[in-house]
Image (cartoon, rainbow, N blue to C red; front, side, top):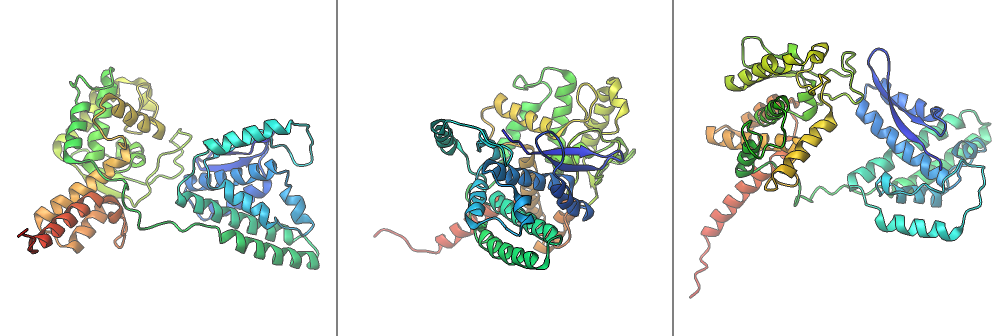
Length: 418
């Protein structure tokens, strides 16, 4: 089986990057050149890794169909439209659901029972799960961009006639390929993620209380840390990566304030996948009681873990290592299991939606104008002044207001059954 794998790497200066590894472990040279283009542009490490995963899918599909892409390009030939169509088909599904059991290095041969191949492919098709339309569209665009890059890169080494022929053929084929990029629907609002209702928020806080019999964690330190994490997420609306990136020096010593700072490729962060801040740096004020809880966690709980002194991050594991993104997901999975009454969609990001909906409710009570509310929200969430991100996070509040207005209109109708 041929496996092309997207691997995360870290340089000595702390910078995170990704490479596409071919069977045997060596990186794919042309993919390294392509990914370096995004590295020079300062794109986030997670974004580059996502692109690398798309290239891994592309190379696995080519190997599956015994296609040596570089050899084709070196003789002035591009992928055919049927071959590109197969790539587009594969881009619809989760990588884990695609079968690569029969893929080998191009140019090798192996006798395989055709009946077994058909049975495996039939089972794979029946079990394969589709990715979102947005993911499918993103995959196709990155594949097309990489293939165009590679055609130009190899074409520059060819004689003029072959170079011209390859340019014309690739442009024609990629135009047909890009025509298959699906449109991401903007009207599908039903079922979109919303924040917690007031009842669910109260239920969540009751479950994570330190004395709650439903609290899923036994160890005292873990109980206090996880309770504090839930409180901070609900109180500030920050992302999980922002919470995990907070360092002790980001806490104000005398005021109830903390700073959320973007530290891409921080050398002092030992995590393989570094949690990061996606938005602008900002200072967030919290209630004095919450800040006291933070300092209580540091002085009475975190301080007892000797290994934690080696790391500046606020949130650490019970063995002192900075908490990972996956651990946060696990915490919320344990919460859902411990309290079946909580929404099955409960994640750390739902806390962000919840904060934004509560913010809208308070802004309405305070009588803030739309312009003032938008500016205040953008500042608190680290968005740019002209950002429209709030629409993504305030669906429940907007829906409620819409229903209220609609019912008011209906009151004006005479529908008496005479």
